[in-house]
Length: 102
Image (cartoon, rainbow, N blue to C red):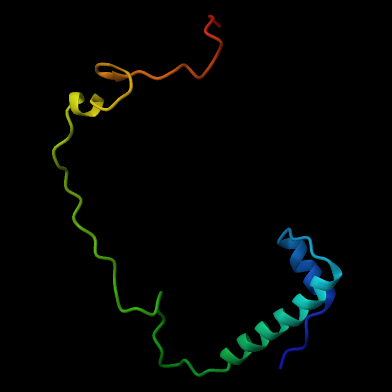
């Protein structure tokens, strides 16, 4: 059975995780994380010699359709819902500069 994590070890992990923890939280997390590590050590004792590694527990694979090109949209249909257009372009408000020349 692994030994309990020390407060310094929890502070180190908190610092690496960029977490600010108070002293009461450090002590509480030391106990909680120790319980988690105890459980993980129990799992490592299992005999998994005949178990095939898998990415997930479901026996499914991705079902994807073939990527085939279809008909495109016309310029008129694309611009039909545009608030402002000057075919074949969308018109948008200027967002850079003050309108003067550089």
